[in-house]
Length: 347
Length: 142
Image 1: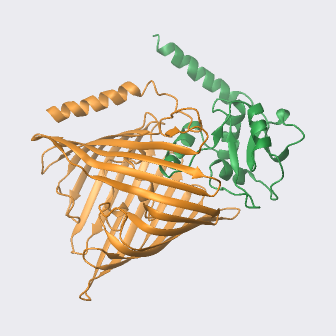
Image 2: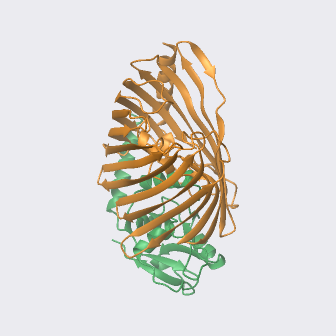
């Protein structure tokens, strides 16, 4: 009853705010804070921002819980015309309320810490810890900017979400299309060893992505060594993003081969396909189908249907029903169907 | 009732603005960048997808405020996005550590900025441009 009341309070606040915020704020000002665009420090090119999200989960096989899922703070900026930096610290799932009471947990980590050297549009270099450029969800994953409370397993659980190393990237442009490339390498431990579900010490990979109008297609190829098991994983994948009118189709897949120290090889794959229909500027409906197969021969499927309300582009209120079967990843304690609700804001 | 009246006026104002003719807009720089600027390239400059001119100098796009007639005409004709879509785009860029273009209050301020800052590019209504600028692109009004 207590957490239902909390959830109702969050919903109430959002609905209270939404009519006031009828006009989305312009992000380009330098004189003050803008929701979704952070706080610029005058004309220095440095900006402070972050995001926060809460969620409510009610699975059929476990007790319902309300959690502060993410509190992230980041600062970034341009240093001259060719150098920029980014630092992000995050506290994840640090407060949970369920029928047993309130619990706190410190899960702070350094999400991103990198410096870019911008030599040219076709050649930039990134050094530090950054999001692995695989798929479309991982690189823009904060709850306020995504579509469902749950995150598809193909977007984070089948590859290391972060890399600490070196990346070369850029874009070639022709008259009709843009071709982005990323080449990345890691030959060391992570700056913060706690982040992500897959921990690596060696990784090499690349991605090519073609964008033409409202369509983009990406193809990554990655090989990495897992820190704890010393398994060597080689995978390739594909991602798709297409927008037609009020419809958005998004999908990702990865398929890999895992080679253990004893020489045995196993296969694993994951995929999702998601459709979003914008009913109005603020309301969208979402449907997603997922399927994954782990190296331990477990198969997982999930079907999600949801409603997304964005009173402002930087703010999201989500409701989702998800049916699941199987369990691929040991970090998930619940395997049943569930009702999810979430609120997130980018600030 | 008190809430409905401003909402109705706002709707009528938006409808009027959409019906109102948009002015000719010109994209201006202090000197020619040594390459042709198409509408698609102009969009890439103002979305910060392209950062450098052909000579290697940094491109510095400058915007007008979102309610300015020239900004609205530019966004519709070149960026092909409504205001809310652009805000959503810049929210994503914020998460990726990309600063949005500088916003200046008036066309006079844009012209002064373009005169002073190397690599700067801005847009003004065609009848406001002065002869010391290089016109990179003309965007016809409706």
